Image (tube, rainbow, N blue to C red):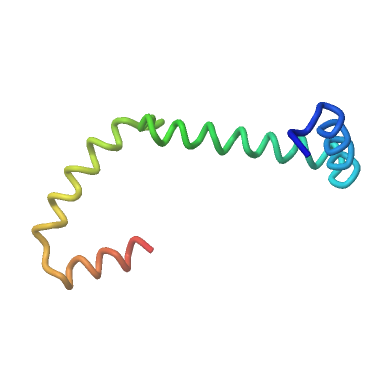
Length: 79
């Protein structure tokens, strides 16, 4: 009852392929790869629009000076 041999793993692999099918397994692997790439981009902080970050800071300072009702009105218009 020691560790599994290569034959045990091959039998498990064949059963998984028979149950799920190759198309579903490759699609799942592709989705997992895309998710990992997106996670890495998020961790690095890569943005497609770096200029937008600069503009966001200016907008936030303008919004902080407004009263609560003016801010709510602007939020309703944005929706």
